[in-house]
Each structure stands twice: as C-alpha cells, then as structure tokens.
Image 1 (spheres, rainbow, N blue to C red):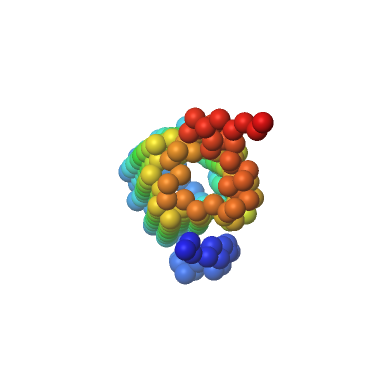
Image 2: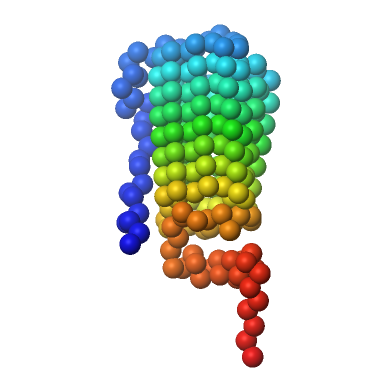
Length: 224
C-alpha cells in the first residue's frame, strides 16, 4: 500500500534562522572560489558575475538578482533565499544542501548535473530550467509553478510537489524513487511517461493521464 502523503513544510522568516544573529551584510563583489560564511546579501543585482566554485555557508539572500552569471560548481550549504531572481544563470554542477528558496523566480537556468539535497522551494516559479542528469534527494516544491522544466536523465528520490502546477515538464530517462505527485494541482508531463516507475499518483491523475499513457505505450483505444 502507498504511504500517505507527507505534510507540506512551511517557510521560515529571516529571524527564524538559527544563525540570523550572526549574519553580516555583504557589500563587495562576488568572485571565483570565494568562501562566504554567515553573510547577508540584500537588495543587490549581479550581472554576468563570475563566481564559480564559491561556497555559501549559513547565509541569506534577500531581494537579490542574478542575470547571466556563471556560478558553476558553487556550493550552497544551509542557505536561505527570499525573493531572489535567477535569470539565464549557469548553475551547472552546483551543490545545494539544506537550502530554502522562498517566493523566487528561476528562469532559463542551467542546473544540469547539480546535486540538491534537503531543498525546499516555496511559492517559486521555475521556467525553462535545465535539471538534466541532476540528482535530487528529499526536495519539495510547495505551491510552485514548474513550466518547461527538464528532469531528463535525472535521479529523483523522495520528491514531493504539494500545491504545485507542472506544465510541460519532461522526465525522459529519469530514475524516480518515492516521488509523490498526489498533492500537485496539475500534472502536465510533456515527455517521459514511461519513466514514472517509482512515482505515486492519485486516481484522478491516472484518469487524466490515461490517453497520454496509452499513446506512449502504443495502445489504441477505440470504441465500437
């Protein structure tokens, strides 16, 4: 028997962070392989920033915009993000652990081969995000919109989508374990229906997906 859906997590305020009292404002420029520990980036805009290999630890980002930057192989450990805009930024091969992303926008991102563990997205919009060959474990998308997100060849373990809308999402050749779609508002899958082994869906979702599933397996449905 499938397990009951897990309750959705709730977002935290900046003051709720255990390291909030130790945060120091960051006013400099970002560079490659920087070590940013207990810093608060607030109200900043970074365009075409070269910050590959940087490490963000116990830090907060508020109302920050990254446009066409390159942060490949950066690491985010115990980081809180609120109202952050990521636009056309290279975040490939990055590592995210214990990260919370609130009311943020991620558009045209390269996140392929990234590793995300214990990450929660709250009220976020993900548009044309490339997560091919990424590894996601214990990740929740809460009340989010995922449009044209590509999980092709990715490994997903313990992923939930409570209250989220999926539109044109691709799962071609993905490997799913304990992925629960039951609480999603809409399950629009453009590719990879044959890769949903290991996922849990509701009866209503199954009925809605039946024509596409039949088509993907070459089944002709005809009534006399």
